[in-house]
Image (tube, rainbow, N blue to C red):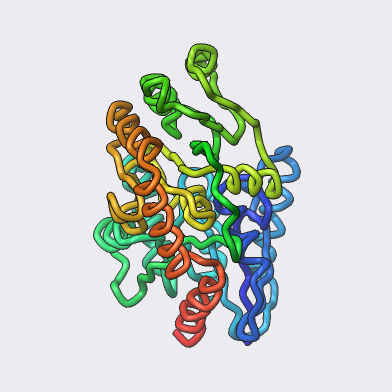
Amino acid sequence: MTRVIVLGPGPGTAGGIGVMMGHLARTESDHSSLAFVESGGAPGPRARRLCAFGRAMLACWAPVPDGTVYHVNLASKGSTWRKLVLTGLLRVRRRPYVLHLHGGGYAEFLKNLNKVMTVAVRSMFRSASSVMVLGELWRQFVSEELGVSAQKLHIIPNAVPGPAALPNPSSTPTVLFTGKVTRAKGIVELLQAWGSLPDHIRTRLVLAGDLHDPDGCITRLLETTPDVTTTGWLDGERLKKELAHASILVLASHMENLPLSLLDGMAWGLAPVVTDVGSVSDVITDGDSGWIVPVGAPRELANAMEILLADTPRRVAVAQAARARWQEQYDIVHYRSRLEDVYRQARTG
């Protein structure tokens, strides 16, 4: 059995990586054991985060059984600075590590680094036993910009659990957004698009997530846009209820890697309307298993929502295709074994 130490946000931590690690922690296997070590990036007091980083450093340096593999979750900014230290310790100790790139803004982050830090980041990637990315776009980026060899690169898309059977569809279709309610998630364009729909087409839009609106723009739009419900942050059970009652999943993000909210919607049999960001085009076949629209284009977003709201047979067909795609490629039941193939390669070197 391969012993794996997973460095990064722990299961249940706020954010996509924490949610993904929560899903992973609930999987079972006879071939690997997982130990999750928080590396200091989770929200909280500075002292607590420093203590967590210290424990992560100790996990990298202290004695471990032979054959232990480190799974290092990575995003931009502070995540990269912490992982440079941790992987540096692993390199000194000659321990195999697998980098798992999650952050949707990593290309922009790398472009803005100075020469010294760019060299350091490239060295961290090239020294990894393997590098996991979430889609073809990111495989090309890591290969071309960071110089990682093809044999080290693995596309391991995110995965989520879903219901064994779908609930009965609602007679009136609801459109659901899940995630932080921010400009970066395209909420301004979404509200503009929703408000432009004809009254006889527009039903109910639910924004399920915390509002982050420093300039007040979203708040002002919410006050003037009809038929919108905001829920604030939802725990897992309450989110499932919203997914069960919805018919369309909308995500108008400006930047993503592979959003879990999209996969959740597919798992629950929702018809996705999403912007063309990150690895979305690896997941969705436009017009078949979802609708892909340009970033920052409220007119196109409104058109896609109007078509799916007005045409029930088409909406149902798209939703069924999305659910089938999730079952084939993005169900959490397949995820652990895909990781174990990468761990095995890292262990045998």
